[in-house]
Length: 281
Image (cartoon, rainbow, N blue to C red; front, side, top):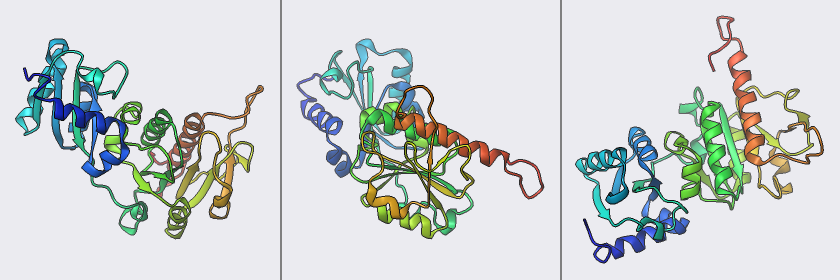
């Protein structure tokens, strides 16, 4: 086992990566906790640089995965029990933590580019979403509903933060998010490539079951507290909302996006193909 003293510089770097989006971007990596997510990252073809294992409390799955990763060139560091709690990636850390290279993804401008027009006909755009759990839910819902791309635009949470990675339940590996600084420019680019922009806002526009949700489209959701900024109104083609019962004023952005994403999936699935039968997706 490697002593905590000898790995102290590495642990300091782990703490920096756990807490700083800028550090993760600069290093081109993110942190993946636990054997289950670690195995999914590997299955998605991502490269693992380092694996930290608390051997004294590691289960068989964690031991096997760490050995497999070491065999592929990842640096395996065995540390004392309780060490990962000091990193701060989670309140109750799992015994395995991997440093994984971020996947190379196309720029937002290529999300619906000509080479992908037959695939990326449904894009989810999250503008200034602030909560890591919500960001992970958006990724998970988008993948499950068959979206071809997710774009995080504006000043929001880093989708590669530890909490978002956990909340995505592996979807971030298979549907790597795109990042964009300027939401307006991103929406205009998507419109220019033939996607309608559909803004989601409480009580605005048509109820989702009466709106045209057939692709190609970009579903645009906003910040948890403030929704979509008024400055984006000129870049939205249509507005849609989820009708509410009772005295609820609004839905969590993740819940609203789930309803809308799966309605898009239903419309795609039920749309007749060239042969006159419903499509699979």
